[in-house]
Length: 184
Image (cartoon, rainbow, N blue to C red; front, side):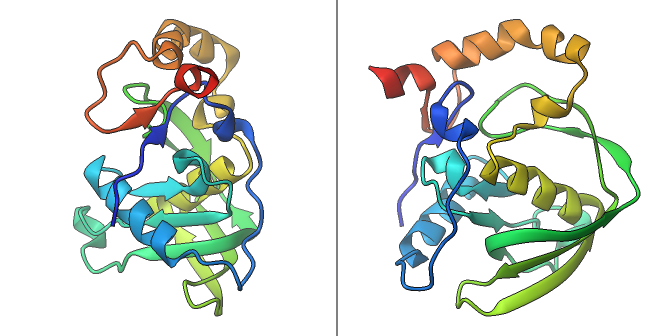
């Protein structure tokens, strides 16, 4: 397994739409690397875009959270939202936008369809933290960031920090690749 650099705000991969994964593609190594990368960065979810792999893959591990100790790690391939209901607010952050945190409104309950690591079809009902993490990561696959859900005033509030992230001027405790590094 390898720890991959996580792309940060300003890197073009974060704004691109990930491509569906075909069953014939070799993704097991990528999935293992994504889990290793996420754990190294102390994250709970990671999308393919965040490691500059434009594939519709999400890894999630909530087992470090008290209410999810028994939750097995999840691999979601080509996830689709079937339904959403309710809404609730919670503070969110993102490994690709370190330090920035803000309140985001998302659906309270969701139903999704995806393929597991063996390409079996799965439907899952998720709520609260699990549902929120899934929605956050599906946004990544669609080139959407959590800050896109913020009102203009809140985005403006974070502008200076976002510029620092984009320029690679923050010390981040895990390997990253900035948009600036991508263009040089």
